[in-house]
Length: 531
Image (cartoon, rainbow, N blue to C red; front, side, top):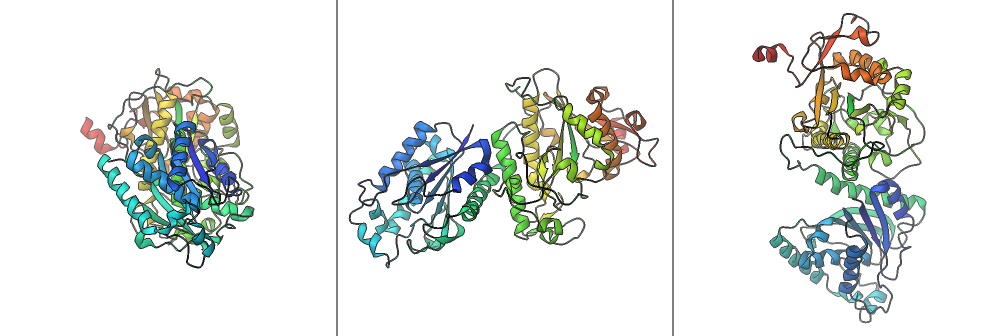
């Protein structure tokens, strides 16, 4: 299902009033959203009321976009009041389906408090224009919306949030008074510029678009943070898919690495192409945006290596809010494919020949890399250099990055399984994450057991991060010959000599490994209980 961002112009404006902002938003959101402008009657002597224009927008959404979800309404100046009135009308009368598809309204320079006393032109025009007459009593505007909220509460429907952006040099509308806001109104910041000039020019338009997209991501992140209401082991249903579009039913998970190559070039491609569902792709981008924003706010602190505030790390100081992180910027930043960016213990064992073979064998096996900043990424996705760990913690809330990703990692893998499973042989997930911070970041028991089986890499000779180098040797061998994955069985510990799969790391010539069906099952304590 495709989402929609609908831009509404201000009084005396038209669909060009937002300048290049919609284009920048479209590039950031990609094919998951349609971007639209909609004119309403906004002439100086228009006979249309605020209510009539809002009803016109409701009709437009019902006829043109009956299935679009989520919907974001973005209104400049009086267009923000029209968007707000759309919500008020739906809160009172419904239909609730349309109401709940509207996730948020974002306004810029909207006269929530009317016009200042010094603006005699607009204040005088109110007597001739019924739409402008609505500005005469701001208290009426808020009181009517509070009544609408009460009506919606009776029906227990989810209400859209209203985010209001002020303009730094706005001489057209009165300043917003936060004390007058309803429970659904929220101050979202201040944009630089004048009432009509805030989006003029490419640089200004890109900045405004980035603020808008960040607000969308904020809403998406709040929704994705809610645990899914599903059974512990949901029953999977094979998704309709052709042989060309169905992803491989053999999946390998590996962790990112602290060691990374610096530098890079312009961004290429698009983020998260592997994700089969638009809603989950947008949730993942929203989470990337959230982690980036916490970092930029100086709220992310190292809880493991005691390196202090993460924003002070050299790599993080160069991060830009590009499309890779759920933002807009596309012309700046230094990017490399993830397989080239990471250079740690597992990656040092994977040869160029291995990666080249992987691209040729993409229909047989998929590799996803777990990252604290990026979530789950393909080896060929372009990423920036960064320094963030799953153990890093929000200094105000005490939540670590792992807990922020936990539900979404699991949801994304569940979605992958549902799309990769044809109803025949089960999807095999090979957990070669090794590092316990990463292994514990997935609710393995919540994956659909009827559609997939998980193979957890294990050995009595090493544990945790010490498993990374031998895991790299194994991954390199599999990339060259994906059929090797069919040889492995679970719960046969130390059954496979690493020498059968390549040159072992120094000092591990006798290394043997196996796979367990549950994390920790092969530990002496667990095996003793089973025996």
